[in-house]
Image 1 (tube, rainbow, N blue to C red):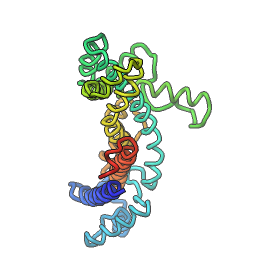
Image 2: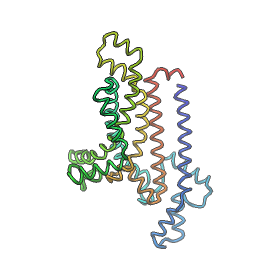
Image 3: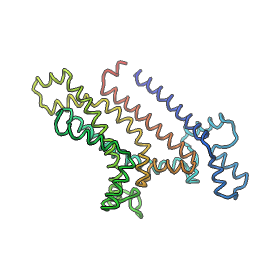
Image 4: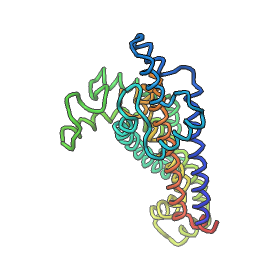
Length: 325
C-alpha cells in the first residue's frame, strides 16, 4: 500500500507539472491566433469583438497568475475551451469525436504487436539458434528501422494505388454513417488494415527482441533446471515457468505503450488521412489552435500517467516482492 501511495503522489506531481507546462508553452510560442483570425477576416472584426475573442481563448491582458488559476479551474472541470480551427466547437467535443479512432487504430496495432512479438521472442529464446531465432530478429529489426511514414507511403502506394486491394484514405467509406451495422464495421475494418499493419511492422521487432533477451536470462535460472529434472513437458516449462516470469518487463512496456496509444501515430494518421488525435494535432498546430493543442497534449499526458499507475497495480499482483516495499 505504501508503494502505491508513494507512486500515486509522484504521478500527481507529474500531472501538475504537465498541466503547468501545458499552460506556459503555448503562451511562449511566437504568433497570436486571434491576430491571425483578424488578418483572415481582413479587418471586418470590431475592436470589442477582438477583445471578446482574446478573453474567450484566455489571451487577454489579465495577469498571468490569474490566467493560470482560471486554466486550472477549467482543466479540473473538464472545460478545455473553444477550438479556434473548428470554431465554435468545444475542444472536448473535438477530442471526443477523434479519440475513438485513435484508440481503435493504436489498440489493434498494439495488441497484435505485443502478442506476436512476445510469442516470437519466447520461441526464439527457447530454441536458440533455430529458424525463428536466426531469421526473425534481424529481419524484423531491419523492417522496424524504417520510419513510420516511409512504410506507410510504400504500403499505400503498393496495396492501395497499384493493386487496389485496400482504400487509401479515411476510416470508412464516404456516405456511410457510423453505426453497429455489418456494412459499416466491414468498411472500418478494411480501412484499418494498412495503417495498423504499418505500425505493427515497425514495433513488433522491439517486442520480440525484448522478450527474447529476458527469456534467455530466465531459462538459465535454477527453477527451470529443477522443472526439467522433474520431467515436466517442455511446453509447460516454456510457458508456465519461463515465459510467465519473463513477462514482467513487457508489462511495464505495455503500460507505457497503452498511454502513448492515445497520442496516435501522427505520421501514419497523416499519410492515410485517418481521423485520429494525431491528425487533429497537426491541424491544430497549423491553425495555431492553442486550446485544442493544450487539450490533446493534456489528454496524452493523463493517459500515460494513468496507464503507468495501472501497471503499478498489476505489478503488485504479479510480483510479490513489490508488496513488501
